[in-house]
Length: 95
Image (tube, rainbow, N blue to C red):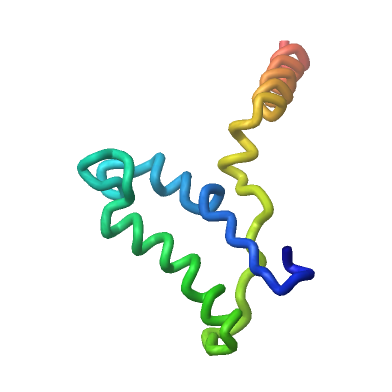
């Protein structure tokens, strides 16, 4: 996508920790759509990238967006299995 001039913005990876931590603040009363705070959080991520693509960003270099956030990575089943194995190995070495 970037080769074609696009700019990836992984909104789900970047916003899900915020929405999961404070759902009553970031979701509207229907518990589906973002609230004003949710839209504000999304715009803080999208606006710099959009302005940069238009050549109108003057706020310094844009940080590289993660391909996958640490929060999303921690939810992968393989990550949980590896963590469980590491805890088990740690217990054996202590005992």
